[in-house]
Image (tube, rainbow, N blue to C red; front, side, top):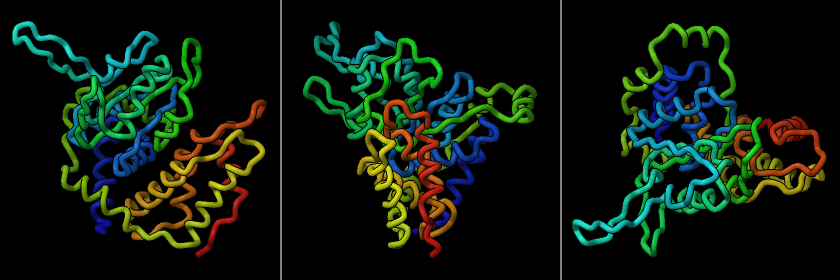
Length: 311
């Protein structure tokens, strides 16, 4: 495995996207981890924090097509996947692709769509293909779905089912910028103009190597046991209605390997696991009714309670 390739990718991604979104290096790095792991991102944040601009910049950095879908209660599955229509001039039915046929798809306010439309994303996110009228259309790689939802406005929304939440590798939040960073935003050129200057930082061949090589990162028995102790603790806790799934276990394992590679290491340390636990696991569990804790806080408390291997 070529660790230098991962370090170079991380640095180029931070430099390029950092021109657009200031002071959010950790979020940008985590989105890069999701790309390498072929995972998807759930962005839960306040309006106006730069989610769309970050994803537009990210699409430019990987040289992919970007499409934004505004989810509303009346949106239909066919509005996402596309439709067959009759071409009267040619006398044949043709397929018109929907916005899901892109490389980076922003599903904005996904929880405003009815469950039927939300479920249209399931096959796409998991299988990287779309089936319509008995025909299957594979999607071009790289492919990543980034969905947003507003955490403070729940009127007229349809909460995502557990099966769909589990398909997001990470749940992230940008949050507000620091005052000095926000002042810099006021002085600089328009963000859209900055995005227009960005160029791809990774080739298709490099991305394929990134997605293949991280599996060679070594994970010791002690670190694996530490990871599994976190997973088991979520499943055995009397404060949770249900714990982390097997898909979540694999997601945390992959995220730790890629994080280690991005740090230039060919082996995982406990901090790689611990640092990814909150964004990878918090949306995959449910607290019992009446609990005053947020899932993120529960994971943090869990990490403080569990012993960390020293070797």
